[in-house]
Image (spheres, rainbow, N blue to C red):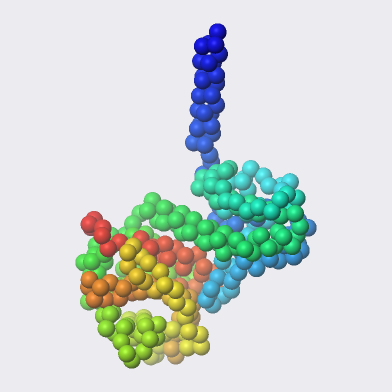
Length: 330
């Protein structure tokens, strides 16, 4: 009889385990536009100090865009209307001021892939404090997740034949067929995607390390000088003697980063046209490559007057980060 009970218990636990596996395996795909965040919080908290604090971080201005856009768009739900569709959002932050002070991140709870942060505290002030302590981490996780999803989308799309990038620069990059090669020169490639009211642009070129690292100026100034000198030659406007330069009134931001094992600078700023009135955001990755004694420059910029630009720049960041120096494919 003991053996029968034991067998029954093993069978029961095994069945439960299988059911859990099936449940996890059948999670719905997460849903939502790129760079959107779902915030679950009571309406009175959202409309007060707590909501102001949340918006200050999750809807902070996307850095260096000429037209102000938030880093994330926020969709707010009170807990009683947090429905099944909202639960499939990729990025969720849930707030509660009814339980103990705690902070946690759970993956793929209602859908996959999904990041769900739970921020709890017993008072409003503690809730604000708890969120502020972790705000940068929340933003970083959401942004990296969105970038990862953008790259997955890119890999699944029809890709442009970019063998010319390998021939010119000894590396590979994944560029969707929505772009086309509009200009090539000995040391310069320009890819462009048409928009209804403008275009997205990716230019690739290289600069000798000695032009960037010398005693004449600091590295940051030399990178901008090199970028402007290339743009003056190749990126010209329709007006007479007009060409693209870095905005004179605001020096770009620099951040140290890595692409594969290569040291790089991430540069964000505003471009404008000398002798013209056009302007927009740019994002440049300057990759230091000792083997070829160069800085490989990958510069993305958007021309989309009076329209949103954030997600176009985000798409091109995802493209640039597919850069591969070790890929043997054509």
